[in-house]
Structures are given as structure tokens and as C-alpha cells.
Image: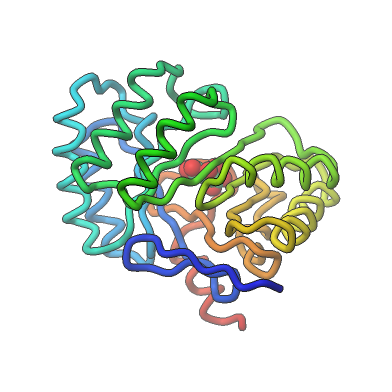
Length: 252
Ligand SMILES: O=C1C[C@@](O)(C(=O)O)C[C@@H](O)[C@@H]1O
């Protein structure tokens, strides 16, 4: 197995070590987002994700950057991933090109984002502009795909990973919905195959209760990080950071 290491802020993600635990902030206001960051700071989460799409409204990018700076201070050196998930991929925000681009750019320019999450379904010009900005600023770009309906078959999934890798992001992330135990195995099996085929580290998970094992055992099959909640979850099937940390502490 080829070793893959990737620097995310002060942390190194690797397909050969325990998965890093990422806790999402899902607050609807800036003030609550900062409070949630304080609670996450008291937890064992190693990375924080700020889900901008949970904010009820933000049109002022300066305010957004100010809140981001405060979150960054509170989380005490942990890397911050900024995610604006659109409703096309199961998020809470209707896609608007300007808002999508500007929110990321504001948080990169303010030195708040260590990584941004860009959806595979975004148009090429939007993706390419953000990739260029991330490359120039030395920021990690996570290319993500979410399916809240189903899990495609293994070959389709391996093809999807390969297509995503071709766009040259830093990380490829895939989250799928299982309807059977076989679907959960398919996600882990395809992750393992793709980890051997593509250059980028992978983050993958099978969502919901049925898929929970993928959030625990995913690292064995090539997933370098796993999402867990402190308070409200950002997706079905997330366990608490405390539970996951306990499990990782007691298994190899
Ligand atoms: O892409 C992901 C993965 C996720 O959907 C999950 O299933 O844990 C949670 C999201 O917050 C994150 O952006």
C-alpha cells in the first residue's frame, strides 16, 4: 500500500495512522457558532468543520470573516475546514455562485480556512477558480460527493473516485447512503480499491445507523478521517466524538 500523507494546518493526515476526528459546527448564527467552537475545544476532536450552510443568513462577507477569526482563535490551533453544502448534495443552502465563491474567498483571505470543501457537482469554472486560489494560498481543497439516496455498485464507485481524482484536489471525499449490509461493504471495498489507485488521500463514509461501522473501521480501508459530533450531528449516523475516541483508544 502506498503511503499518503497530507498536511492540514499543523496536522498530518495519513492512510497509515489512526483516523483524525472531525467535529462539525452546525450553528445557525455567528454567535452560536463561536459558542459551539468553545464546546468543541473542550472535546477530543482534532479538526473542526464549519458548515456555513447551517447559518440562517449571511450576506456580509466581512462579518463572516470576523466570526471565522473568532472561531479559529477558540479552537486553539486545530485545523478548520470550511464547508458550504448546497441542497443538491444534502445541505441547507440553495446554490448561488457568487455567495459560494465569495464565502470561501473571504475565509481564505482572512487566514481562517485551512481547507475548503468543494462539491464535485459544481461547474468546472467555479471549481477551477477555487482550486487555483487554494493552490496559491497553500490551502487544502477537499472535493466531495454526497448521495443521500443510495450506494452505487463497486465499479461505478471506483470510477467515481478516479473521476474525482482527475480534478487534482488534495483530498477526495465520498458519503453515501446504504440500504443493505452489502452497500456498507461496497463503500469500504471501493474505498480500499480507490486508495490503491489514486494519488490523493480519501475520506469516505456510509451514512445512517447501518453505515456506522464505516465511521469506526474506515481507516483500515483507506479513509484518513471520520466525522463525529459534539452536540448536534451534521449527517445521519455520526457518533459522538467521545464515543469514537473511546473506541479508537481501545482498538489497535
Ligand atoms: O461531507 C461530510 C461528511 C458528512 O456528511 C458525514 O456523513 O459525516 C458530514 C458533513 O458535515 C461533511 O461535510
